Image 1: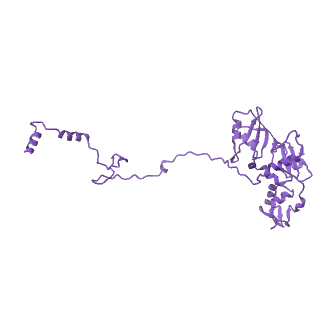
Image 2: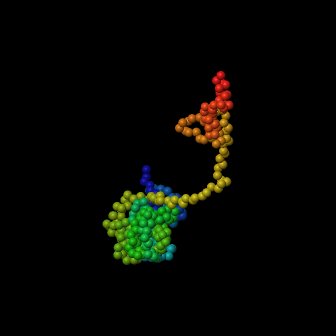
Image 3: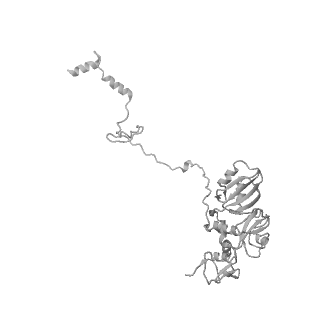
Length: 330
């Protein structure tokens, strides 16, 4: 059986673009596989022909991997679309086709990696791989007590809750933050949720790669040691997307049931007491569960009991009752 690979991996292997960008090209119909529009999930086999925008690309076009570290200035947009004014590709003007690993906001500055190695892009970016990115942040007002704890615990945004992070206050209005995920404008949105506006944001580290003293707008190649360490760090990383399970729970809404909406319970009719039959009588006391005894009838009036007790006392001599009882004895 011939070896086959996914078509987006094949395109990234040639150095044309990253896998993610290849997927976008496929979705918009700009990729042909053996003369037919390619679809996501198609496989490339030896002997197949792949065209992008009418140009045939093959493995022969694959060049030696290039890894650059750029100190991106503010105002530069992280996109490979060269028609966008101030795009990072035109700014860098590198002689070979390369693409950025991840994004950095137009209003932000600092470290960003660029490469023609499509295999490492997703592995570096996935939050589930726990690759750290460190930022220096300045906000518009003094940082209040409790800010650090709230940021580190996670902030609700974009339908989820941000993953735990590390925050350290470095000044009255400044702090550093270390993230392992990269949601859209994440730091700015986190600060906004707590009532702060970010006035300056600079990325100074990705994993072991440091911005150090590299001047703004300048770039350099990664050293052999840095490249080797980068490959070791992502060797066991997954390129598959990792879902954030920290969903925002919807608020519980308290409500009252209207009287007319309550279920109606029919009352059982009273059963009259009949001699020799155990039944319930209106107003009768509840039977004791432990004894299980039958009901003995309604409780007698205390005045009747006293009269009966009095009748059992000896009759006074000379009374009609004494005369009657004496006659009975005869």
